[in-house]
Length: 264
Ligand SMILES: Nc1ncnc2c1ncn2[C@@H]1O[C@H](COP(=O)(O)OP(=O)(O)O)[C@@H](O)[C@H]1O
Ligand SMILES: [Mg+2]
Image 1 (cartoon, rainbow, N blue to C red):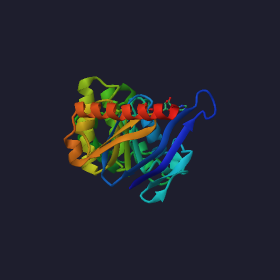
Image 2 (image 1 turned 180 degrees about the vertical axis):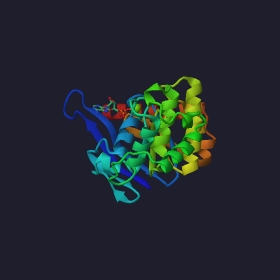
Image 3 (image 1 turned 90 degrees about the horizontal axis):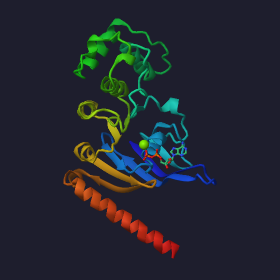
Image 4 (image 1 turned 90 degrees about the vertical axis):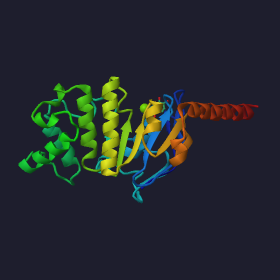
């Protein structure tokens, strides 16, 4: 369903700030895969997401979604295929618009060339039903401005807006990191639920290793612009934080050895 082949991207090439954000990266996702993504700061996790969404184009390599080559397809054309939630609760919603207007906007984005964002009766009912699934009482606040919601509520709404149109791929970039622990847990639970409900193919970046182990059927670890570890299925189920850290150190150690060999 998603096929990334030999992807590389370098920022500020040829300058002192040159940064190889991704190098020779390959990633293949099957329909319904739920992949958690971990890795240190600057490992290239967000860059990977930006390439899938189309907000960045790779220097080399190809990206296919459902066998269609989308490598150079502009972001707005891909937006129907992609649902995305960012870390910042302010990023996914429009604060000066009401809850129902925000949902209508997400709904319209998914329809080809529909610029009407009106809220008719039938749609209002649909939005209410979707909001009810969040169990936050938002279905009774359809005309409330989104700017008045708490961070957790906004993130729940962002998640709903990113998923209820059933995108091909859902991208979650540390979407619980800015929330307090109880709200983060709520959003995590909600994530598991909607991903399952719609059978969404999902990539979720998280700093929380336990979360990365608990959720999803696959896990990838990134470091310095590369995917350095991939586990899935039973192997993932058997994994612990301790084993994960050991594995990270083992791979890092190997890299340092080969770096030293190259340097002589
Ligand atoms: N638009 C950009 N311009 C220049 N450098 C960037 C840009 N985006 C990311 N980088 C750099 O690329 C590397 C990978 O960044 P990123 O993908 O955001 O890492 P992560 O999400 O894993 O923390 C970092 O060193 C970052 O500073
Ligand atoms: Mg990031």
